[in-house]
Length: 198
Image (tube, rainbow, N blue to C red; front, side):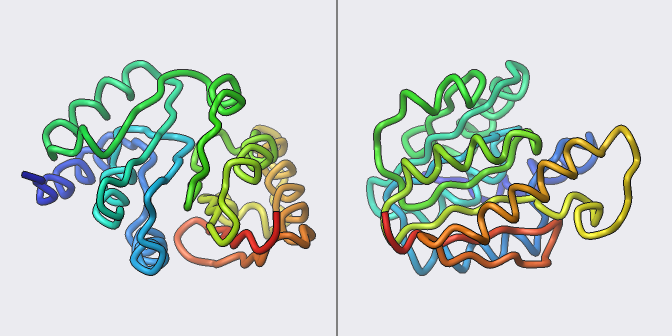
C-alpha cells in the first residue's frame, strides 16, 4: 500500500529546513514528461530527503524502479525513512556515495536520468547520463539557471565558479547534435534533453 499523501509532509519539512527539494512548477513539468514516457528505469543524481524520487515513483511502469544517488549520510538516512513511510521500498533504491564514484559502475539503461546535485559537476554527470540514457529517453537537469545568476552578469566571487560551469554545461548540451534540448525557464531552470541518436 502506497501512502503518497505523506509527500506533503516531506515537502513541508524540506522547505522549513532549507533542504533543496524540487519546486512545484518544475515537478509539474517533469511529471508531464514521465506520464508520457511511463519509465521502467529512472536514475537520479542527488536524492536529498527522497522527495523527488518519491514523486517520480508515481509514474513508473509496472515493476519499475528508481536508482538514486546521495553523498550525505544524514540525507540517505532521511530518504530511506521517507521511502519506507510512503511504502515505496521496492520502487526506489538509494545508492550512498559520491555520484562520480558510483556512476562509472552502473551499466543499466535508463529511460530518464534526472540530475540535481553539485552544480559544478553537471558536465561530468551529464557524460555518464549520455552513456546510461536510452535512445528516445530523457536527461533532465534542474537548477541550471541557478537563481537567475546564469543568465545575468552577476559575478559574485563565491558563486562565480558554479555559474561559469553551468554556463559551459548549457552550451555543451545545446551544441550536442545527438540530443533535442530545450532550456525551460521554469522553477530554477530545467534543461530537458531527448536522446535522439546514440
